[in-house]
Image (cartoon, rainbow, N blue to C red; front, side, top):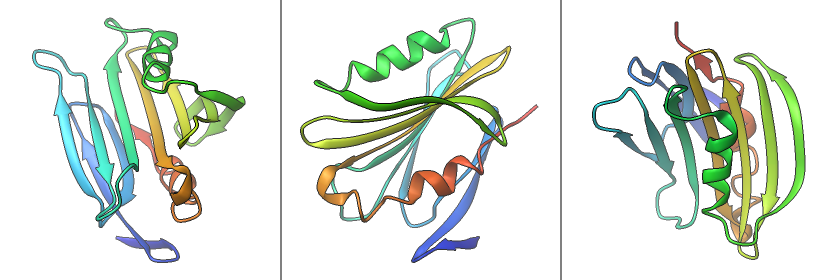
Length: 149
């Protein structure tokens, strides 16, 4: 555990099945969902007592999905998503596509990474009224994301 900013302690989640490791807000509840019969799945974290905020890591085998399909599927969950930023960024885990956008009610941010075997999508969604409360969460966790070999 380490102190990463004002009142946010983090823990490390290491996942051999999803082939990744990431720090997450320690007090947030964690939910791990695996797709039966595959090495694909997702991790979800939600803050206590606050609805509408979700930190999510989706890890899928490349033989089942391409990175563009992974992003397109996520967009379908957000009716009226208007993208305000789409850029390629270099992070410790490798090159990623960084996307920021908004719907009428929610703020959305994601990073999509790919390698020869897997596609990863890390996203943070929150109600707009909670944007200040959780504005630094994605910046803190995304730099800790690692692909396990």
